[in-house]
Amino acid sequence: MLARVYSCAMIGLDGVVVEVEVDTAQGLPAMVIVGLPDAAVQESRERVQAAIKNAGLRYPRRRLVVNLAPATVRKEGPAYDLPIALGVLACSGQIPLESVENAMVVGELSLDGKVRHTRGVLPMAALARQQGFRRLYVPSADADEAALVPDLEVFAVESLGHLVAHLCGHQTLQPHRSIDLQALPAVGQTDFQEIKGQEHVKRALEVAAAGGHNVLMVGPPGAGKTLLARAMPGILPRLTIDEALDVTRIYSVADQLPSDAPLVRVRPFRAPHHTISHAGLVGGGNWPHPGEISLAHRGVLFLDELPEFSPRTLEVLRQPLEDKVVTISRAQGSLTFPANFQLVAAMNPCPCGYFGDHQKACTCSPQMVTRYQRRISGPLLDRIDIHIEVPRLEVDKLSDDRLGEPSAVIQQRVEAARQRQQQRFESLKAADTEHEPHPMVTCNAEMSAALVRQFCALDEAGKTLLRTATTRLQLSARAYHRVLKVARTIADLEASQTIQMHHLAEALQYRPKLEM
Image (cartoon, rainbow, N blue to C red; front, side, top):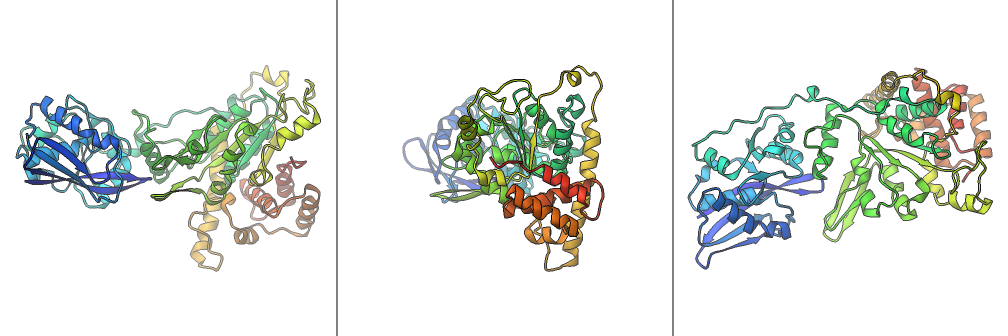
């Protein structure tokens, strides 16, 4: 007898329907699994056999052939345990064949028949609804995550025995309740009002948040660079439901979704250590998985002690910073992961950290300072819009008990500026002009050269100032356009239709005074 059960395989962030075919044949009792399975899938033979026996069911003493179709798609992980077990029970007549029709099944089995957590359930549920499946059987630990997808009956499965009783009509499982996305709480973050002083740095981070610009903070140890970076997500615009689902999908595939939070409601903040490998940052593996830059999608990627990262690791950031995606090629094919993150980097000015400090003398030689600063390539620095110095904090400000401006107030100004930018790009798209923006353009930092020319026009005084600054600061063509983008963002924060002289002057202050 031939039985078919449908499951799902993950390729990057997308799912593919897998047809699990189980057939019985004459021969010695054994199970053969074909269809490009990896070691974890091959090991499911022992798990399935033990789970069926310990659930009080009968394991057929015949030769079983399990085919995972399509055979051209690589199958990895233990998520096929439950569908294989149902296929074995269906072909041996212990459950009705029609009970698993029009349903998708995923889950790992323990030896006692319990169903364990499986990564990537959210994109699997989205695929099930897209392909017209009416029911989805998932582990109980993943039911909340699967229920984020509407118009799909999700059943939380505790154990193989409970699912068999449901399919045979002995004990009915109720569909898992759908999740109210708006009711899910957001986790608290570092508030700007708790950070003493550094008002000009807070202003620079507000400008960066309003326009989606990348930031580099340079200052001595203990000046507050890390604390300021950790407060950055709190002033970014709140995640929309579509953005939250987009981020949650990545975390689900990477198996980093918290068990008590089925949906990511706050913008990600990723702070990898400088010892991270190339594959850990951009993603990789025999079959690539998302890296830190994809986990920071729609959030902040914080690189502390920037010069300590290996040059090869830093250079791979250049393409994602421009294209907002990362493509990983392997012999089996290429996968593209989203990487629309905001880079916030921090560094000391020299190895000892006190070059230029007015209170503590620097012990580094000029050659050491130059060599340290040159660890960061010019092309990477050119892709950073805002360079800001973070000086040592004065004792008077440290001892002051007054609180600063709350993050919620700054966030309101940032969201208002982002709204103006979106309205500007949407109006241009509706006009259907030759300068229609790319659909992904959502903030000033993503503007193309054509959009910069259209929306960042200067008067004669502004052109003269920018021309002089370009010569003195030796700005590249990319840096020239980035100054205009930052000036446009500053104007949006003030609800100004045009870029004024003081907007441009502030934008120029965010360029490094001397090229490192």
